[in-house]
Image (cartoon, rainbow, N blue to C red):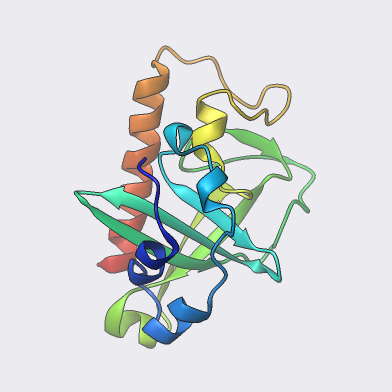
Length: 163
């Protein structure tokens, strides 16, 4: 993924108002992020752990989502699998809920998916971050194919938000 600026991220949100996008927490360490190892940028709001965000380049444009996590953080004791990158965690997967874009979102419609709580899917797939014993299944897919699958799953989630 190419490095993103704070302004690019704020203008890319599709499921919140411009005012909300202006007020939300964007990571201060954008310059230090491992952009070469990221397929998308995901982060949680340190002041409000129930809020999470992601930004991705899809079809030549940057799209960002504001999400909430009813179970903010690792509170589960059973193993769960991220629906994006297929990494299993004990307590490290959260339900992320994004309000739909447009009129549907204003009426309260939302879409949810189970994702890595820290939104570091790209790093887990590449083996740059360890989710613990048995977290990554041995697959016949290459790392590149796993990245493509992760991005296809993310694209499908984003498509359901903007539909």
